[in-house]
Image (cartoon, rainbow over all chains, first blue to last red; front, side, top):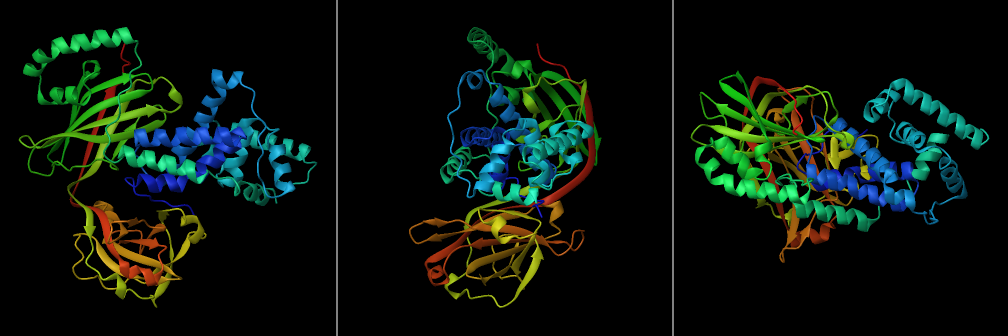
Length: 161
Length: 350
């Protein structure tokens, strides 16, 4: 069960609570720790700067998801990012199975990875994902279906997705 | 199966301690509960210099003639005050007038000055807070913040600056915004760094605990100890005499599974939002912050609702006697309801 009420003036508490969610979504979308670090900082600095007020905790969560996705897009769209060659990054997952899964996920387009992440990890419905990403519900469902299909193809239907 | 494997993979991904600490330090340095939104200068330097010269020359004349709200605007946002377009639309309810005085829409940001004036009493004061009680209907998605920027005791008027930023750095589009307020709180009292008169060396393992459904919380170990929304809390007891915060009661302190739990209760708190938190300090002033905290309720509906808050510290029982209990709290003594609503046109500044 996710918390429904964090004190709006407990800035540190909010940051600690949403730190993993923001970082994991950023990582899911970008696939590297370096980019996730950058996005993580940008998202929380925006939060600190703006101190937005939310009607409820669901809105706060939606804000963090939205801003994380936007910052990821902005990072990938930047001239700097387009012109650099990424370093090989060693991701320290515990098992070969996890490493394989990570590698297969990297084959998916970023927009599919974010939908997969929100659906499977954040337990959000397609309606909730559509609302927070400002996409049509049918678009989200299609992206989820295509992502599943791609995963099945890539993983030779190893996974019951 | 995929879900389990995906979650297991993600559980290994987290920000480094250093990264998290850097952000927490930034939050602490910015004093984010009181911070005024920084101004952003996007215009070319030449335009900025010209603007500064214009303002320098114009300020004495303006200052002598403009109304208090405009003086306030120049104090809060001197470099952009002249860009604010007058709106001057008001709504009156329950003897209180809300007026949208002016607005400045530029790029992805809308900034709006709003005043609340009590025409019949003293329900508006220097602590009046709209924080969680206003709403903005607009045709774009974004985040909003509200800060009180002034209070005029003579006219019982508080002034607020609302800032809305559209998501995605997109230029704000649409033709109108509706700003509405249904309630606000005032007569707020802050208790900062207050010492709680309790001898911690007498705290013992608490025999009476209960399983509760957490309605929220925070802290580095929140997710570890709140499993599927459930956790173990102290069974609320009779309020401690002498707790120094009006509107909040201390209803329990004791050890559960080697961790110190401290519990408070606030009655019918939806109208007041009384809240706070504890920390420990030793004789040298070294501070120990909580490990995690959580909230739970006796029931959702008022009247009769009690909001419980429990702080949990990872401090060995044998060391506790070296510490004293401190806390920061905010309470409010007045809650006012009404129906204030103003719709005004949106116009991007040139």
